[in-house]
Image (cartoon, rainbow, N blue to C red; front, top):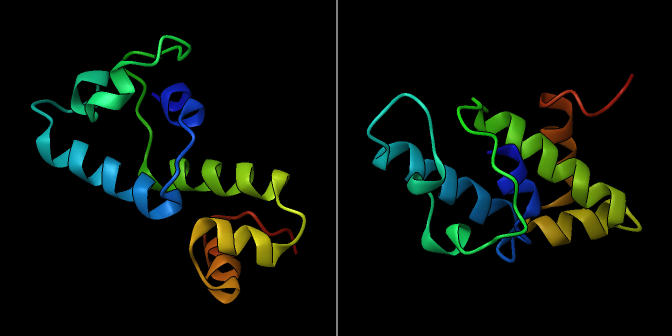
Length: 102
C-alpha cells in the first residue's frame, strides 16, 4: 500500500491523503487496508506496485508524504504551501514525526 500512496500525485496534498486514509479505514471490512478500500482513481494506476497486506499507519504515510514534498520544495515555506499548512504547523508535524534532527 505504501507504493500506492507514494505513486499518487496528491493534488489535494496532506488533507487529501488524510481524507483518503480515514475513508478507507472506515469502509474496510477487515483489519488490513487493500486497494479495494481506496477510491476508484487508485485502482486505475497500472504503474503502481501494491504491497498486499502491508500495514502502514497514518503517521507513517504522512511522514513519507512530508519527506517527499521537502525533497522537491526549495524552502520550508514552499513545502508548507504545497502541503496546505502554515510553516509553523509543518515544523510541529516534522517534530512530532521525528523528521527534525536535534
